[in-house]
Length: 165
Image (cartoon, rainbow, N blue to C red; front, top):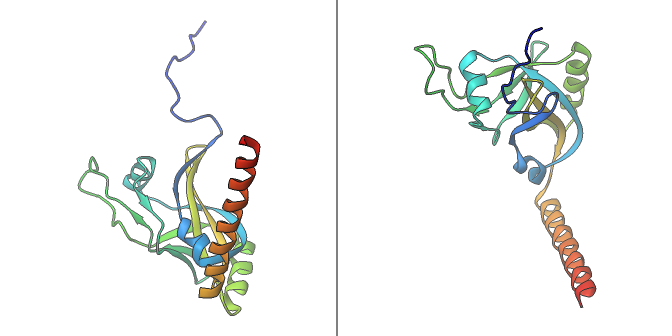
């Protein structure tokens, strides 16, 4: 009878492992809808992603010729890569169903909508990007969000002090 392998798993089977998140997106945009998309990558890129060397800040998704592209994402070079290392800021194709791309394209054509990457994670060993259909916040919206967050913190603090006291 064959023995079971005794190697340890570094990630839970079937679980998601967060690689990078775009917290600035939630500050600058109202996210209306989210989707999961796969990525077309080269070998050294997936190695860098597994190492966590990804920056989603200032990146966005564009629809070109019926295809979705992730633009401006920085995936650092992989030190152990051979002579064929990847370009860190190259445009990467997103894997979405045609209906999803058409629907996103129609919504982006409306005034004020854009598509931003929210987080990158590994799911069953494959790199995925959660993208969000978002509307831009104005300055007063940002101030309102900050004021609401501060008020919620003050309420939580008051409740905590009341229970202690």
